[in-house]
Amino acid sequence: MKRFSSALPFSKKWSSGNPEIDRFLEESKSISEGSKLKNSTNIESTLNSSTYLSTNKSLELEKSLKWIPFHEFSNLVEIGRGGFGIVYSAIWHNAPEKRFDLIWNKKRVALKVIFGSNVSTIDLLNELKSHHRCMESFRVLHCYGISQDPSTKNYILVMQYASEGNLQNYLDKAFTRFTWHQKINMLRDIVLGLQAIHSENLIHCNFHSGNILRHGYGTDRNNLDTYISDIGLYHSVVDSNDKEKVFGVLPYVAPEVLRGEKYTKASDVYSLGIIMWEITSGEKPFMDRAHNMELAKDICNGLRPIIVNNTPECYVQMMKQCWDANPLMRPTVENLIVIISGFREVSNYKVQIMNAEYHRNNLAGKFGSKKKKHPEAGYSSRKLDFMDLPLPKNEPEPSTTQSDNHCVR
Image 1 (tube, rainbow, N blue to C red):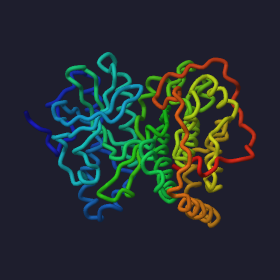
Image 2 (cartoon, rainbow, N blue to C red; image 1 turned 90 degrees about the vertical axis):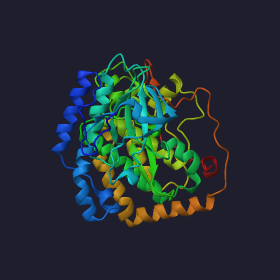
Image 3 (cartoon, one colour; image 1 turned 180 degrees about the vertical axis):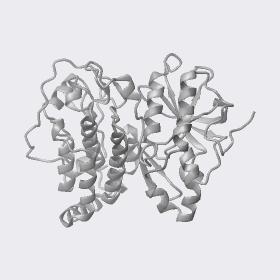
Image 4 (cartoon, one colour; image 1 turned 90 degrees about the horizontal axis):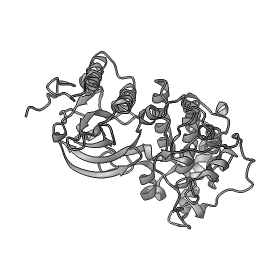
């Protein structure tokens, strides 16, 4: 069987058998051949300028999406599952030979199997289109193309592999060595990824720590990049104008969305606020409570996770702005980028972060009681259908904060 030519981003030799998908793949090729990468900061810092210039052309071509026959994959291992399908790691034997193999580790890929995609391709094409529009950002997980399981006929998105798994996995195993410098860097990467999505006038609609992935290069476990995944799939299933369907992970869903209002960029920012808290605590939000109607009511009434002691005040203020009950009061991603830049530039903010790191070091290894997960707390995306929820409001400022020993594991 003939293999892909590394010089061609798409080969007419291969066809999905679906005219809509084939048409889109051809369109992605045409768009990519004439486009330029906007964000080359990380690549330029990794390679010298002459190498970057010589590989820029191949990078542009790589933004096109391919049809990849299923037999080109081997060593499939399940690494996760959610509301829409199962994710496997796999070896892609015919991956194009490019200079960036060692950096992007393209030989190993993630295969995202979409349940029921043999019935309808609408959801699949929406996610493909969304990923393609955001592929100029190095903070959005790269999509190489599409395949299909010949036995189930389910379509498969062939994605960039993330060695450290999602943010939930990473915090479980690395929280005690996760420095404040690394936390701020990761937050910056997440916001840059969200900016790439919003700049294309897209909304994630299911933004939570399970959709934030970390990948490491080489043997340095601290040399990690952060990516946003699962763009477009949830937005295609839950139309932004549909006031009845809500799909997601309850603790991360904005209160106005729980009440049936449409998804907006501000609802993604709310989710970011909850993710910011998770970064400081190392725990999943509201893990000790049932994720039911009562929690949804409490969230609408202003309940938020208890702020962890010794969190820098500049970080706390940004987090509170993000999870404000009023979506009009939440900052845009452009505002957030300015705020995060201030964490490194404003003297008072730098002192706050330095003090937080001092306390983190003093607490390292002092394990407190870990919250027990409630049997009805769920962190996989699901349909959320709550009726007669109260109007969202902010809860009065609490008089106490969560203790250090309660959150450090």
